[in-house]
Structures are given as structure tokens and as C-alpha cells.
Amino acid sequence: MNTFGQIFRVSIFGESHGKWVGVTIDGCPAGIDIAPADFMPDLARRKAGAAGTTPRKEEDLPIFVSGVYKDKTTGAPLTIVFENNNVRSGDYDAVKDTPRPGHADFVLARKFNGFNDHRGGGHSSGRLTVAMVAAGVVAKKILTGVSVAATLTEAGGLADIEAAIQKAIDNNDSLGGIVSCTVNGLPIGLGEPFFNSAESVISHIIFSIPAIKGIEFGSGFAAARMTGSQHNDAFIDEVGTTKTNHAGGINGGITNGNELHFRVAVKPTSSTPREQQTWNKAANTIAPFTVKGRHDLCIALRVPVVVEAATAIALADLLLLHRATRIV
Image 1 (tube, rainbow, N blue to C red):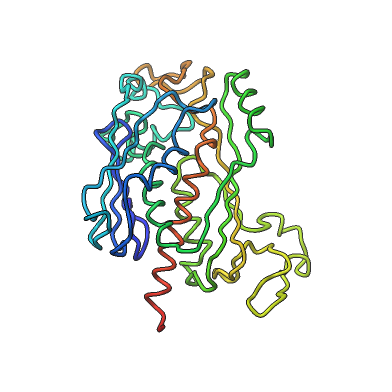
Image 2 (cartoon, helix red, strand yellow):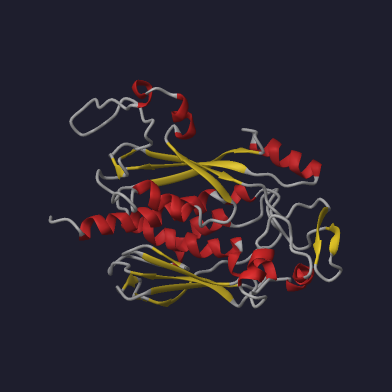
């Protein structure tokens, strides 16, 4: 439910407007160097502040609750929490009667019989991605010699990100984007057919990031318009280097040692500034509705580091699983 992984097991907890959000990592190897400063670069990339992002700002200082002693992981469950201090819960009072279009308000209330914390999206909020980023920092430490890099390549259909954001501001509306992720330095052999193929595991956690609506590896959907001879990646040496990389670094669900590459589609932020129409439970009618609160015009701006973290978590788990099930 709220846990991902077989060996490197990541559990996310907390709510957007609760006291804190956090993560517990079970199966984290002992002896990894770890200090709060290690987390700050990635946490800073996730923070708001740029044009098109939410005015809500949190310090996002990692607090180690367990699993760390003398700046080393102990092998016990590693728990890290982040305080929520900059909240304005009253902005969400209307959500009880008027579920926001595009959000999970309606389905969460039905699923949990109204007992869910509706403030800021509660446990389903993008706020919880701070915990995922923290887990990603730890996962990257396990992936020795591996680099994971994600970038926003387009927003609102434009390659010029700044122009796209200005257009959204001018139009008083939100927009989505495309994030591209590459991984280099991976060994051959990560991935377990069928249900734990590299694509399956990565896709599973990527779709756990709020606002992700699609993923494609290598040439992706364009492969459907290619012939086999066009799509096949020819091997050019004894270590498995390929002339092209339409497969995105994965064959048969297993990493092949070439660059792993995929792209994800991020939907427009559901909390658009524009007035919308939605069902009002108290009045039992359709009524005008304007979203209150502080939101990103383009959440895709802050997604790349979360994609990196999710990818690192998935690959760290596959790497530990690979080591655990092979005779060295």
C-alpha cells in the first residue's frame, strides 16, 4: 500500500498539513555515510521559489529518527522526517463540499468514508515527494558509479520553458510537461522477468509520483511505427555496446549496460487559477468553483529530481535483489 521494494523497502507516511511527513527505509545496508548535508542539494531542487511554483515554502531539513549512528547507517530501519510548518489549512474548507476537478478529493472521501485528511490533499499530496527525494538520496549512495539525471525538456508543448511559464501566467492557467531521465553506469543484468522487469519496477514507482500520466522507454510509442530492422539495436563490441538505443538500455526486462533512457508525461496542475464548474454536495448542484490555496502553475518544474529519486530507489532495489539471488 504505502511501501515499495523487495529488499530496499521504502515506506512513505504523513499528510500535507500534518505535523510532518517522512520515510522509513528497511533493508538499507549498514555502513553508508549519511549526514543532513548530503540531502540538501536534491531537496533544494525540489523546493518552490521559481516562477510558476507554489508560494508555500518549507525548510525541509531532514531529521534522523532511527537507523543512523555516528553518521553511518546502522542496518536498522532508517527513518527520516520533515516538519510541516508553513500550512494554511483553512484554504481547504470548501473541499469537503466541492471536490476539486482533477484532484483525488472525491475518490478519497468515498474510499475512506470521509475520514481522510482533506487538507492540501492529505496523504495523496505532492508534499510527500520530499520523503521520496530523501529516500532517493540514500538509494543513490547504493548505486556506486551510477549517474541518474532527469531534466524538464518541454512545458506546455514548448521547449522554451521560460516562455511556457510566462504563457501560463498570462493565461492564468496551469500546464504540464515532459521530463527526460537517463541513467549511465548500470551493470548488465538488473531486472527479473516477468513481473519485476526493469521497466515494470521503474514504471511502478514513477506512476506513484503525483501528476505522472505516461512513460515510455527508448523510442517508446514511436517503435510502433518502425520495422524490426529499424528498431533493433545492433551490438558493436564484446561488452554489449549497441549502435543505437531504441530499447532504452533494457532488453527482455533486463538492463543491457547501455544508457537507460525514458520519458514521462506530467499532467497540468489540477489546481488551475481559472474558475471551473464542479458539483457542490451541500447544494446538490453544479456551481462555480475557484481553487484556493497555494499551488504550482507547472508542477513539472519540480518533478525532475523526484523522477531521479524514484528511479534510484527502483534500481537500488533491483541491484540488491540481483546480488542476493546470484552466486558470486
